[in-house]
Amino acid sequence: MASTDKPDTEYGKEVRPPPPPTGEHYFAVDLALRVLLFASALTAVLVLVTSNQTKLIPVLGSRKSKFNHSPAFIYFVVALSIAGLYSIITILASISVLFKPISSTKFLLHFAIWDVLILGLVASATGSAGSIAYVGLKGNHHAGWPKVCNSFDKFCRHLAGSLAVSLFASVLLVLLIWLSIFTLHRRIPK
Image (cartoon, rainbow, N blue to C red):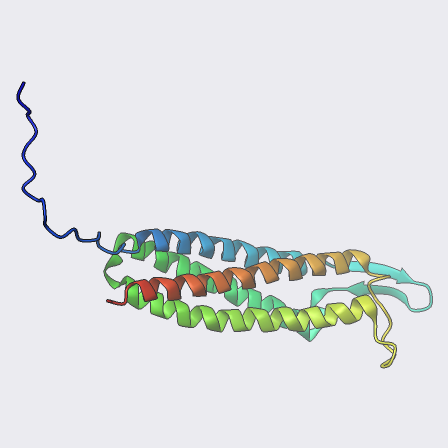
């Protein structure tokens, strides 16, 4: 019985590795991380802005605790709002790159630079709000600042949740920076 297989004329030729990936799957991961960044920034802002508590303190009367009573919390809300707006803009840019991958390298470079700037903004806002929250939780007996989280427990729980979500946003920004740099590194000709 004769074989219908074609003879192997390619025998002895050099096998070339497949071409490097074009990066569409990197931008799909980038898009997912940016959507998570938006969700976490929005959640952190909404949790802090909606957390107000009024408490009747025997000697002082009725006291209210809101985010706008502290400049550090106002900075936190503004910084996370900027990060949320930035994530919306970069989500749209990532979607455009998925449809037109021609200028994806330029976008990756811009993403890496701007992601580092937004990470600095979010990290500094989280640190400043966290330091005020820590003073509210533990007090500072040297300066004569009492603990306030004993009285305003609901507000402090909301603040702690908001800070945890903003730390998650900072981790997402670090992952986005690593992804952009890794993708740029893969595109360097060897």
